[in-house]
Length: 220
Image (cartoon, rainbow, N blue to C red; front, side):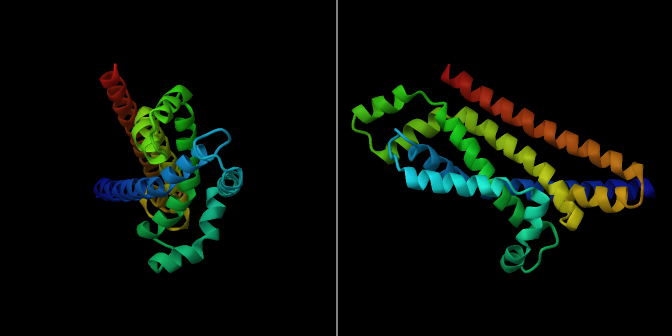
């Protein structure tokens, strides 16, 4: 009876965690990817050099990244409640997860794009390519393997963040581990939860590595 209950709770909690992580990753890239591109193209010597924008944007991103997630989670409760009507539950957790991941994504994208050889961009400029063309047809395609690995890293980080969100009733494996495992001192719940989290992380990393390798092989 207990085993059946545990399996049911694990399946539900796993689904909630996957749901939160997938949506948060998608939403964070919708905003984080453009921010990362702006950070690169407005940097000194790049195609749209603009030091004031670059510095202000970089400062904001660093400021948000410096806030520990558990504190950030509490700070934006009013925003979460405004957007979804509550700050508890799986859907509500997507808001802080997304907002916390956006600056992280921006820096990952920035790092990926800065790995591109300047000669490729210079060649596109010499052929009369505009800013949009350089970004969409040179920079992003060239950085695709690295960007995919960045998605995997982001998703893995969000798995950890989602577990912390579970402490304040965010749902998922974090809630299961904290309320049923930790507070009840029940290792028969805690350990299976930890094992599922490890499997999720390993699965995401393997998927990201395989996709990046496939792209590199196609280029080769």
